[in-house]
Amino acid sequence: MGKGVFLNVSGGGHVIATYGMVGELVLRGEQITYYESPRFKEEIETLGATFRPYPDIRPYEGPLPDFPYHNELALATVLTWCSLEYIPKLLDEIRELKPDYIVHDSLCLWGKIIARLLNVPAACSIHTPALTWRIVLANKGYWLDMPEMFLKSFNTMSEFRKLARILQHTYDLPRISFMDTFTNRQGLNICHTPKELQSSAETLDDTYQFVASVQNRPCKHNFPLETLKEKLIYIGFGTICDPGKQFFLDCLEAFRDSEYQVLMNLSKSTAPGDLENVPDNFIIWSMKKDGLLPQLEVLPRAKLFIMNGGMGGARESAWHEVPMIAIPTTFETELNSNRIEEQGAGMLLKHKNVSPKTLRKCADKVLSDPSYRQNSKRIGDACRNAGGAKRTADILLNYVRGAH
Image (cartoon, rainbow, N blue to C red; front, side):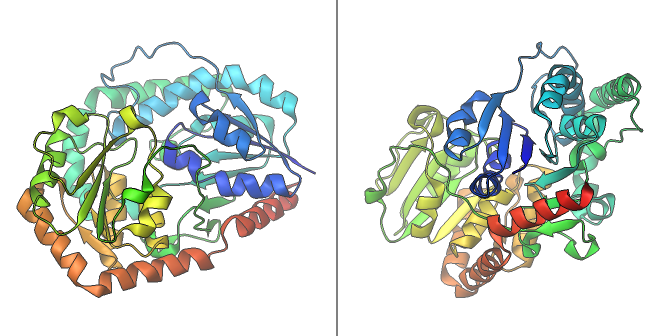
């Protein structure tokens, strides 16, 4: 029986992606301690792991007006700052646990550093696409979007270098690069996606293992699944990416006279009261008002998923053979959206090009062409054949035994 510690960032998709692995490890007799924010406590304990809350940290006082999320470049500063706050509060506590291994998210810089300081074997859990400079530079979206991102984040880049130097000197670490904060590569990197959804997968070495599990979230919900009809379009952008109120207004107009029922899961910037003249064929759901929507129970009923290109949504959609329209709002989701389109499992629609007319035109094309569903099924089959939670646990435990 071994002991494992999981350290994650507090993004729903990042945490949920590890649930299958955690559950399988617990079934095999492993003692798992999972550090997260309190909103995941019940779910983590349901898996049989021991939940520990992250310690309270002082309010951020740097140059980011929208902490904790501004844009991808500013995120590097946030992750470095969080590491400076968390490490002194977690280091002795995790040392006392005497873990045999640590699993940390690819964005969890403090997890990689703690594993290094304690000399404990560590694996990286990757919910996003795996990133290297080669993959980033090969994407045309990088060259198109990066100038604007640099302008928006000019002040935060100098802040990142300052914080990184403090972190390096405090803990006698090698130089921390900008890319390090997004990758935190280890000798084992567990990718929760099939190769079919990974950009430039052929450029990654064998330390990257693609497992592609899909795990039901052990959460309560009050969504009326019995109200869903056979012809269903599902629209949802997750908990972080937010397309804004105008996008949801455009959706109302796009599908107002459609033969399809439309389930629209609103993002945090939009309340049900912001939408007027909602057509009878729409169901409006608000996470803030109504609670979590059981996506894995909705998707089997859907004919089309309109989403942000997030890896979790793409994987779950393909698992249930649902074609997609991907409307990315970040560089990461643009990588995924390009891959969805390349694989023929859906269409990419630029956020700036969204209008009721383009939404309807894209939806009609995807719904009328069976190849999109067939290709989504092909990716779903690849997910099922990737081994899931059992293979993930095998890979992790074999890696840990080899490291000792």
